[in-house]
Image 1 (cartoon, rainbow, N blue to C red):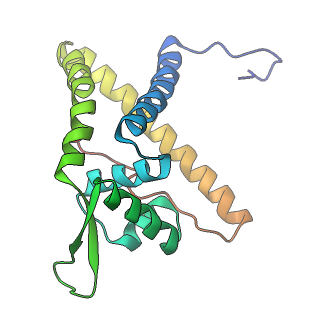
Image 2: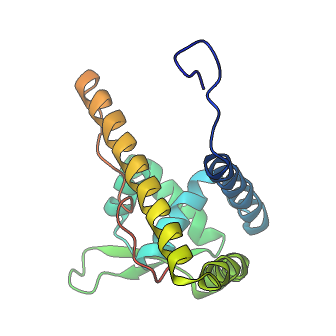
Length: 178
């Protein structure tokens, strides 16, 4: 990254580590896709289903930024591979929901939870001031990322009449899920 004076900006070690975490997340997702035998789009769909429990096909299409037809193909593949199932909509018998299978949810959590628990234990082992510093830094990172997404979305919507908006699931997260 240029510092505006013709040289590279010296990044703080915390920023370097944050970038490394982002890269490692990509590696982790690749390995999970490989182990679960799903492609990237199907894995993204499965992540949304695991987070929300169940979704209408339309909500899933919106979250994935796909057409209804493309989403039907994704859902068909997930159902065929045993990662998702269709369930009747509880209040509209003409509609249905897509939900992760219990097996798929267990499989994903078995892969993720050891890492999540280890990271949680690390921060819990810190004194109160250290924990507050970590939370403050991460809140700042989240705000910076959300701000940049908003800027990119605004730039996109001012130049194009396509789908815009922050993907569902981006924003403030609770502390219960990984």
